[in-house]
Image 1 (cartoon, rainbow, N blue to C red):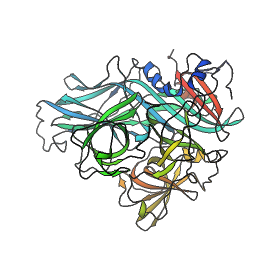
Image 2 (image 1 turned 60 degrees about the horizontal axis):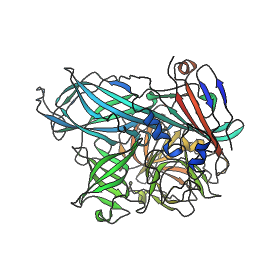
Image 3 (image 1 turned 90 degrees about the vertical axis):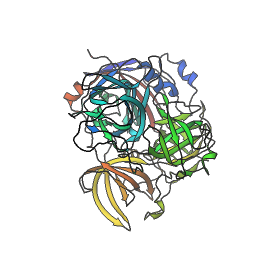
Image 4 (image 1 turned 180 degrees about the horizontal axis):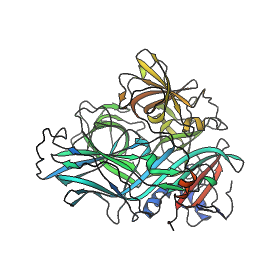
Length: 581
């Protein structure tokens, strides 16, 4: 279907520029050349997000962060006693990324131009610096809500550092909504894109970082609720204002030789593609997908590495896609504890939440916030539709206690539901027709909600967790064309046992919010999670007040509309901020 014709809609906060875009070129629709013919300045789906970040490559945000203190030594990263630290040479510092978020956003991307530390004497040192003509080093933060992955490792002089400066070359946040637009039920994705308006955020930690010893790790935690303000992402009237003001906590991370969770150096569910294999038969280099292509990471294996989908290290090859767990090492590399290959022959892989499942035509729609491959070398934007007629279904091997659950965990074509996190492989993603999913693997995900009740079954404690209305599970369960009925999609039964890492600072009690990370199953209409980790929760997001909206950014809107396989109208909106007056 076509979108509205050229017109300008004005309100107190922004201008909406509708353009005649024609059919939207998502996975499996019209070729990009046909779509481009109707407009001059709207790019193809595959190039959309890469172009956004390229256009912003020289546009920086400066964030000044005060930091917490750490006395870092070799091994544990700390020194005992009250003696003054002794400085000699450089220390290898690894920056680990994580986020603290509720479930309002589907995606939050940042492109880093530089990260510098300033010492108490005023000297500055660089941890990351993107070349002026090169690509940014970027990351997507919603998939690491409560987990972690490495960004960069740099060698800096030992000193006492009192502040950090992060220059960003781009930022993007995405929200998903379902509801009526112009009288028609619509599934909407809104892409909020920041333009060059400097934004400074200070985190209230007063004491300095003392860098000594051979190595240390810093955790860079994006506080998503504090970093993003937006109204209703469903209809055009909701685009009255938004703001993206990235806000971080920078804290020390003490590595364990045998880490158990993200707070002591464990990395879980890290996806990447092999780019090189070492001659020793136990090391490789992978490219980790990010917002502007990929970033390299050195990986080693040992006799304790568990292989899934392949027999051993020798079965790996350049070009193979991996999902892995491991321990961050002092040099920033990863010692793999688990290496999984879901599809050895895949040319393309995507990962993200399912948005719509249409069994009548064997097609599902997803938001692919992580992607790599021959046809999608970086991040894409919009909806991804796949045919799952011949797909092989699987469950991630990251959690090892599935056999002890008091229900039978399963994931297949008849019980998958919107909201579940899936990893999809394909032989190709063509310009026309739906790409065929070769494999579909259920992956762990993070949910944020309030505990409303608890019970027990065998070795498990079961917590009933109530979700916000904007969470994908309750919001998308009522779509037309959904044949899998959920009993209560606003609640998830969370199963916690001795294997669960409890990182929460407050007791797991009714009325409190927590973040739960694990595999979510649809068990005969009841959502159940096998929980691997619990973190403190994040308050539910309220719509901004009128005064808040008046202080947020104005923007220009580009919008495309078309029908989904299930008959629901899909709307993709790209909102670009205009300079402040």
